[in-house]
Image (cartoon, rainbow, N blue to C red; front, side, top):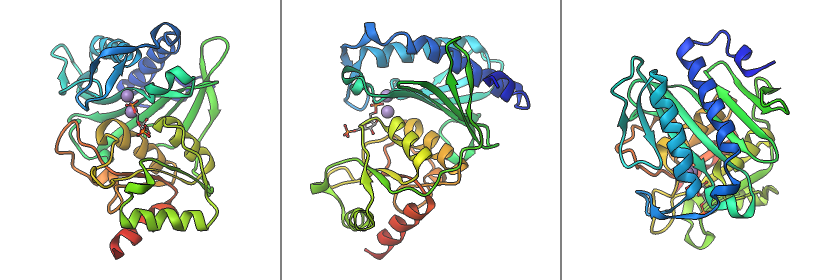
Length: 295
Ligand code: AHG
Ligand code: MN
Ligand code: MN
C-alpha cells in the first residue's frame, strides 16, 4: 500500500502535509553527497551548522511556505517562530530538518523530525495532531502517526513510499542508548543506568537521536540524553526532537519523560528550550521517575 492510500481517511490538510514532507525528503535524500561540509555559521545553540542542515532547512521551509496550509513554523535551524502571512490554513509545524548531521561524514543514519499542531507550536507535545520522521539510512523510511497508530513506509525502487509495517507497538527489549558522559551523571540517573546494566541491557548509541530512537521503537528498550552536572537541562530540544519522537513512541505504547514527569505535558517556555529526555518502554520510564522521586 502506498503512503497516499494509507492516509485516505486522514483530514485533508494533514494528509497533504505528510505527503509534502515525504516528497521533500526524497529531494533531501539525494542531496547528501554534495553537501557534506561544515558551514561557517552556528545555530542559536552555538553548534556549527553543516551545509546540509541549512539546505534541508531551506527546502523544507520553502515547501511549507508554498503549501498555504502551514501558518507557523519553528525550526531547530531558525532563531524564532516563522509566520507565513500567505497561509490560508492554521497548521503549526516544529522541525529538526536534519538530526544527527554531524554523522554525515561517517555515513551513519540521519533524519528529518516533524511535529504538527493545529495552531500554536509553543504548546505541550500532547497537543500535537501528528508527528513523523524520515530516516536516511541503508533504507529511506518514513514513520508517521495521526493518533491512529504508528506506521512505517519504505522508499521503493520506483521512488514511492510503500507500507513496511503498520500499527507498530514498542516491544520489551534490553538495549539502552545513553547520551552524555558517565562522569557527569546525576545521582538518580546513575542509579537507573546501573539498574539497567545489572539487568543485562546492551548499549546501542550512534549519536543520531532519530536513528537511536527508531531502533528503540522497533527493538524495545530506552533512549536517554539526561540532564547532567553543568547542563541540568541536557542537550536535546523539547520542540524539535523530544516532543515529536516522544509523541510517536507514546502512540506506539511506550512513554517519554524528563526524568520526573511526562515530557509531552511540559509547557514550553521558549522555542530553544532544552530538556532531559527519556524515551522508550513504559517499564524503563517508570523506573527513572521512581528513582528520581527517591533521591
Ligand atoms: P542535531 O544533528 O540535530 O544537532 O542533533 C544531534 C543530537 C542528537 O541527534 C544526538 O542524540 C546528540 O546530538 C548526540 O550528542 P553527543 O554528540 O553529545 O552525544
Ligand atoms: Mn537534532
Ligand atoms: Mn538538526
